[in-house]
Amino acid sequence: MTPRAVALAFRAVALAEAGSWVGLLFGMFVKYVLATSERGVQIFGPVHGAVFVVYLVVTVVAARVLRWNAGTTLLALAASVPPLATLWFDRWATRTGRLPVPEAAPTS
Image (cartoon, rainbow, N blue to C red):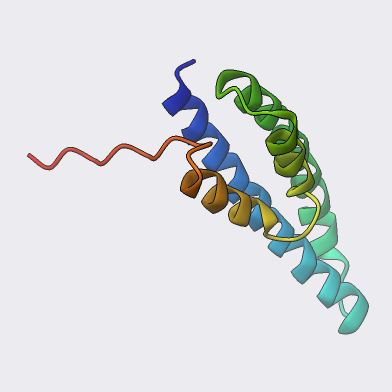
């Protein structure tokens, strides 16, 4: 895989991980605060679990292909724990040159 393809996959999975976190947090709010339904947790719990594992795998692949050092890799892995931190890591890694910038779409 090319570095740009890996970066694209990483960004997509990081966004999905953050989105599944939001869904799970919403489901937990409905279940524990409103005490009306467990459906959100039943749906988003497994979804978030699966996307979380995919994020970990894609992070390890990205670390190898993009030649991240141990600190960057550990930071990327740690970003999977707090809600929405994968989005912060994506921006930080792009800004610091650790994650290639997405290519612009052709305009003709």
